[in-house]
Image 1 (cartoon, helix red, strand yellow):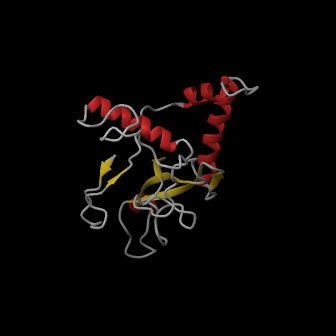
Image 2 (cartoon, helix red, strand yellow):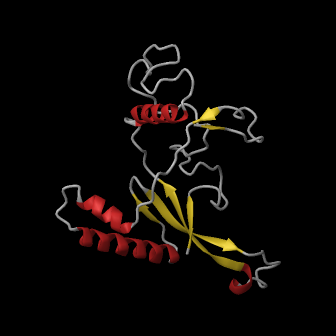
Image 3 (tube, one colour):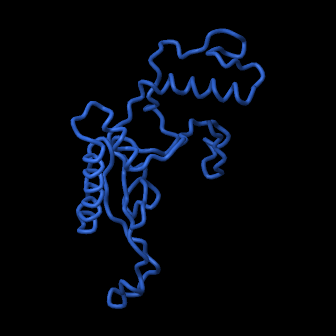
Length: 190
């Protein structure tokens, strides 16, 4: 959980929101080993080769101006990091005006929220026990000792409101209008 301290969002300032954390980074070797463990006829080496070739081809296509969509993962495209603007089209020069390129990714599809409620309870329980918060058990109970939970046990998807600024079906990048997407998606320098 994280408290919103952004002065520019007065309606959300001071409210607490779920905040995703990353516990580790997995490289291509680790991903290939993980995938090989999912009852596939392909070896870890074959999978690593396919992933490596896929990454190379995605960069190659993006540099040609072709965006690549991998369903339920991301749309990859190229972005440009400009140094400064030119006063006219004639005065524009790649060497003077372009700093570099970046690989952009915009998430597609939806992550399943089925286990989110259970995982949040586990994390909350772990944090409560580590921080030894008075009045909070490490079990699934409320501060007054009554059983906790969501009532219907289904958990919510949070689709009604979107205070986090993440994407929606109509606007998957989380930004409005055109312009560059420097504020949305992941950017990787190339």
